[in-house]
Amino acid sequence: MAISIKNKQVKKQLEIPTENWVYFHHTGQSYIIPVDPESIQDQMGASFASSSPLSRSAPIYSYQNSGPRTVQVAFTLHRDLCQEFNPGSSDMVEELINNLEGMVLPEYEAANKIVNPPVVSLKIRDEIFIKGIVTSVGKTFNLPLLNYGGKYKYELVNLNFSVQEVTPYNASILSQIGGGRRDTGKTTNISGSRNITSPSQSKNNSNNNSVNINKLRNSSGGMLVWMF
Image (cartoon, rainbow, N blue to C red; front, side, top):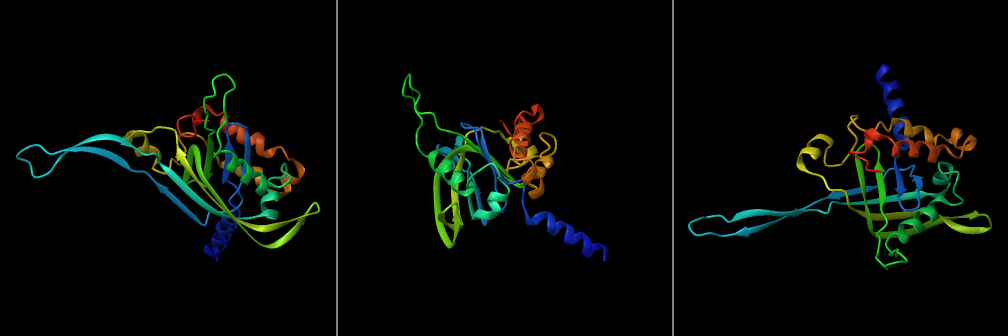
């Protein structure tokens, strides 16, 4: 019986992944994604230059560079559920898509017309974290249609996007924090972020989201991994 109760508690905790979020560094906007991605692709390669000297059966390799690490995620978003956990947004799904699509367009400095790529941070539970630039965004709208303030919108949206990492790491750091760049407990304790998406709290305090994520962003202990 104890095992059954424990399994039910674990299942209840996993039903709504309140620790999934996206943070847009150039605007300061953050969104909770209260669903787990249907798929995650996390990959990084390395390049080596080879030379073939005489009297060797194999070439000699010299390291050139690694990466960039790329994370691609695919979500099925429910407008009602996403809205409940992001009460400060008029339409969280639409705002998230607009922000992501805006990141694949350039932003110019007025003085010298230099392109500044906007940066986003993506966190999936305690397994995946990446800070980088958005390289692709795709979306598919699915029935049913719901009435949002007099406008009919699709309730289900399949959203996928890719992020390429901009923060460099070395082998010794990755051996400690892991290839997923997840928190090990030695840096930022993010467990408190789960409080920001409680439905009851969201209705009573629409600022819970920004307050807690700002707390994470300003934590000096998290600079190694989170780099906010």
